Image 1: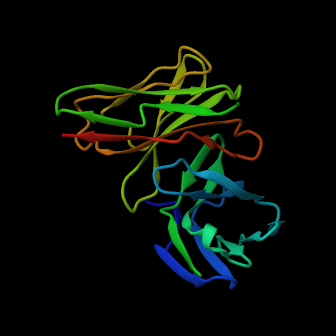
Image 2: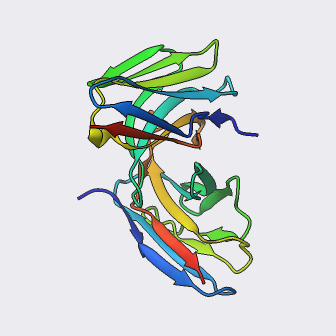
Length: 110
Length: 113
């Protein structure tokens, strides 16, 4: 049973527009949510996180929104750039464990 | 330079052979993790260790073994009992009591011939 799901395997966006990546979870005990970015044949790199007691966190072009009642979080990238093309994973923390979603491949077209 | 080093980056193995993947970190993190990524799939947890000389199974531990004799090192052995070992293996470390952020190595791609 997947506790963290990313239902869109891929997303294509025009350069300069907004990219919205979505993530759903089932366990209400998760206390931290994170987004990672991954290029092929490399390890994931941390992007942004949000505590379960907040509903928004912003860092430059990246904003994460958390809707606890819907058990849903989203990552907004504005404006999108070709260098943002990668696979994005959401992850949720419980204790010392991170559970990852299946990833969404973002393609930003010039 | 602080970070996590995985080796080898690419590894080929014949069926029936055990192989050990190395993971070293100099970030002074207590917790270390091994994940597996298959094409088009997310990261699945194999084993994790929160402290030296202690480790726990993750979601897909069968056919794998680990040791944690030193804080800096968390090697993963893929045994011949692992039925489908061809995959991309990622090691990570972190002080997850803080924000939960994990730092990942560059990964090791294992191919069974």
